Amino acid sequence: MVERALSSGGIYRKPSDFLAPDGSPTQWNGSILEFPGKESESSLCQGGQLGETMESSRKVSKPSVVSWNKIIMDCARNGNLDQAESVFEKIPNPNVASFNIMITAYAQAGHVYKAKRVFDRISKPTEVSWNAMVAAYAQEGFLMEGSDILKRMPKLNSVAGIAMMLAYARSGHIDESERIFRALPDSNVFSWNAMLSSYTINGYVEKARDLFDRMSVRTVVTWNTMVSAYGQAGKVLEAKEIFEEMAERDLVTWNAALQAYARNGHIDEAERLFEEMPVRDVTSYTSLMTGSHHSLDRAKTLFDMMPEHNVVSSTAMLDLYARHGYLEEAVDVFVKTREHNILSWNALMLAYVRKDLLEEAKLVFVGMPQKDVVAWSSMLSSYAQNGHLREVASLFYTMPEERDQIAWSSIIAAFAQFGHIQDSIKLFKLMVLEGVEPEKGCVRTVLSACSHIGLLQEGWNLFVSMRDDFEIEPSREQLCCVIDILGRAGKINQAQQMVESFSFVPNAAELGTLLGASRLHFDTSCGRQAATQLLQGVDPSNSAAFVGLADLIFAS
Image (cartoon, rainbow, N blue to C red; front, side):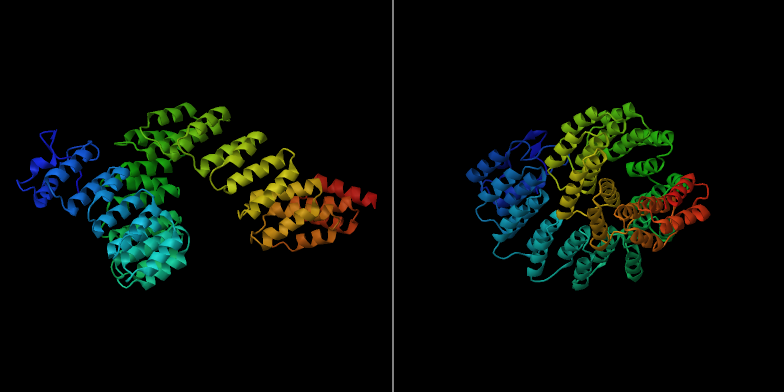
């Protein structure tokens, strides 16, 4: 591969300078291999030498396909995919390696369909070809296409299998990961580690531990995966046990253990481990810094101690300043950060949102080079909380990405809170039709809205759908809304039966709602029972219950 420009003494040299009198391709290939020039920052593609190289090669030499392949690799490596494609199409007789290089180049750039077109041009794909195409689909999450290629392979191998195992795991299809793992003919420590990672990605810590215990060979990666898995699951003692059992530790090990302590609030243990670390990197400092979020001074000290800052550490510090109300300092960190990603832009926008500076937040939002669903939903939620319904609707309907629960919940709550209850109910129905599962807070909002404007049957249908269709366990607040709905509809007995069916002791809100419904419909028996239960056990000093019971008795 040509990684750097052909140079001598800092001066570019043409391929013909290195050719033997006969212009043999062996000599031409050797010239490329001989001068990788790791200290040079230029390549054939970057230095503007590609055209000259190709022209010279046509006139005075017959470069082999190996030479062309090296140029393609160099162009692709330096991000010049168009040039790589141009060279590839000009090769007189490309070999299978040429096709494999282009498949990989397209895949790394996310052009999976272009990679497939190149793959389809190969008359006899090699194992490398199949692996490259499977990896291309797996990387982009194209599970059906990747699975189809996997099935067409003459012989399944661990490279392709691992790629699809992890792709399925990232999409939550752990059963498919297990199926591929069992089918691998050449199972090895890498495939076992991949299955271990598949379990931990999906939070199956116990399954991961069972697999870990069955592994005959373990690498440091195996142990690190388990330390990290236990830390993410909040099982700090188990993470500590694995860490202390390890015969060999690397920096990743120490960082995984540090994160296990820090993210679960064991700051003293994290500080102790930090001091014991033989080597630290920016991840070490960032992990402890984010764990020390309650102490801004300590976080600032760690940030200043870092040997270098990256976008992750800077974004973490920006977020900590914003959470503590130090907007100016948060902005200063952002300005001083040399590179930004979507997370740092989101953090800056939220820093303004926390101060209710919506115009400034909007300026950041508009200026973001790219926006993810978090950015859209955060901006929408900010407008919703401040009653800017026109802006809420405008943002919601222009979101380019799939709307998530936050976006839907924000617009539904905004319209319900500011009196547009019918609109909020329509939006809730639309959300369900689009296949988005409602969150509990959103359900409570709509139930309450139905209750307040008398859409009693609508509210009851929603409650039944939430329980039966979405298998959402109703919260106490939602149950209270349903009691109110039944009570307003005059179905006092059903409301009373619901209260009696609770697996928990009814509280003042639930019994008070039942008492209010009994007063409304002059149901003395139910009202007496609710008031007695409220005053004798739940809240003996509840004056409203005394008044409600007295009114009920007087009215009857």
